[in-house]
Length: 501
Image (cartoon, rainbow, N blue to C red; front, top):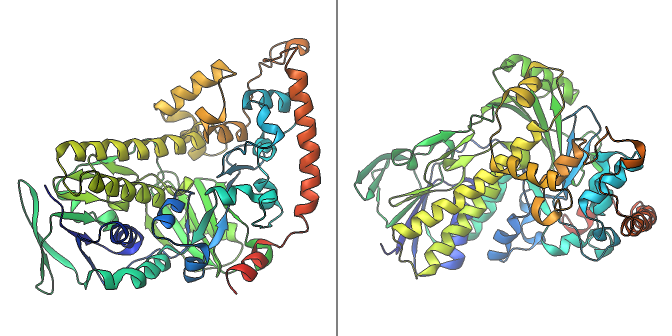
């Protein structure tokens, strides 16, 4: 079929991001977006991954263009607290720079060096990334000495997703046919949707229909089966916006994730307030008890509400003439901020598909699209599973269940086992970002049963002194750098002077 017209059903972040990307790439395709005037936004902040930079570049958006419109702050890392019996640890969003001394040391050797010197595995990320010092000291800078990754598309953002959608609506609604209405009925045949009828009586026709209606999945549910993720048991969240008590110290450049009795809490520091939510499994705690535990964690009374979490994916994201993007296609869970990441990847893949042959699409193109986005969301699911599968918490029925009773059969786990067993092959090219979770959960490559003399599993009489020297020099460099970072502006002051002027 030839795509000359597209109807997007649903606004929100998925709908308006899809609209923006299509407007920027296809001047000759007629685009219509219909959205309800009743929007049930959660409104407690969204934590993004660096993939959003590809979307921002596509729309020619700079930080100063959009950040102040959606209460955005910077995000350099995700910090995990109480996910095991050890200390907190960072998962930096950036890859290792190639111009520092530590990149001479393979991750497998670094784990051995940390073990040999009785250092904490939870500090593994700190040896590779200056940005972890920015996070721990709550500082921010565009200077490449401290944050080279900012210039390499690895910075990300916290923002209010509904305000980001509002920003995009204002930017693009005059370039499309924009309708505020509710869908009342679909007409379809063997080829897919033939017509959409709205409550006002309006009828919409297009070559391609894009479902951005969230968990409702108003269009795609008629064509594609939903497959639940049985290995992810969290199905609820109690959420609340929380005012800052000490904005300068609480507006940190990372997302905090803290394990509680039956799940975990997110803390997303936006410009105006913190977005917080307790993600839990209703199998192990009631809604009322989850609210009480959440309030205790916050430390003060606040208005809360319960939202359902649906972990799973459509068997096909594109079926007949219907494409599902955003929550209508699938959702892992909030842990690794994959919601908007899957949305962005689907949008970019859709654009590539439509561009490949000037809008002509056949079944081969559709199946190729489906396989690609299925691989992406499956990889995100597998990565999320690692946070539970590797934990050593056994202190509550929930943590016993997610660490021992779930059969995590995934390619990512089996692949990681092979890399761990091979030792030297464990590196950033083949195990990023899983290695941060592996190290942060306290895993070592050394065999503790060996005698002290032979305890260093990967000892090499030629290269290990070189690694030792590089490690020592890098530690000294980081010590000096940390002194400089302490004199930088706080994240809050930096934003105030550079974005919220």
